[in-house]
Length: 139
Image 1 (cartoon, helix red, strand yellow):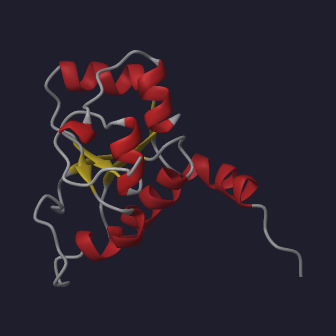
Image 2 (image 1 turned 60 degrees about the horizontal axis):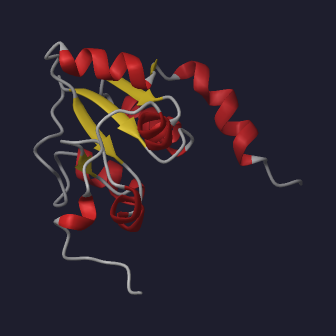
Image 3 (image 1 turned 90 degrees about the vertical axis):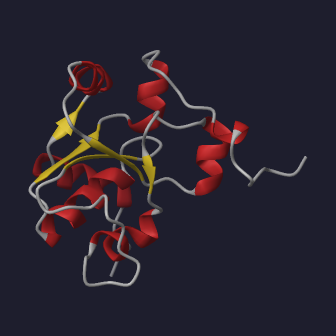
C-alpha cells in the first residue's frame, strides 16, 4: 500500500471546510464580528513569525482535548455556539483542525486560506509574540 500524499489529501478535504481569505477575515474583524481566532501552529512558529492579534494559541496536537468540555484540558473559550477561525502557517493543518472541530459538533468554523503567511503577506496586523514570550529561540 502506498503512503497517501498529504497535500493531495488536504486538498481533497478543502471543499468540506468553510474558508475565509485574509481580506474577508480583516473585514469581519473590522466590522466587530465576534470571531475567536485559533492559531494551531507550534509555539516556535509564533515566536519566530508573530501571530494575528488576539488569537488563542492552541497547538494542533491539543485541539480536541482543549475543545472538549469533558476533558481536564478544556479551555473555556471553546463554547458550543462560538464562531471560530483556525489558522496555521499556510492553510493545510487548519483544514484538518477545522474538520476536527466540525466533527466534534462545533457549527461555525472556518479556516484561513493561506494561513498566517497569507495574512502577513496581505499586510494585515501581526503581533510580535517574541516581545512578550518567556520562550525564545537560542542564538
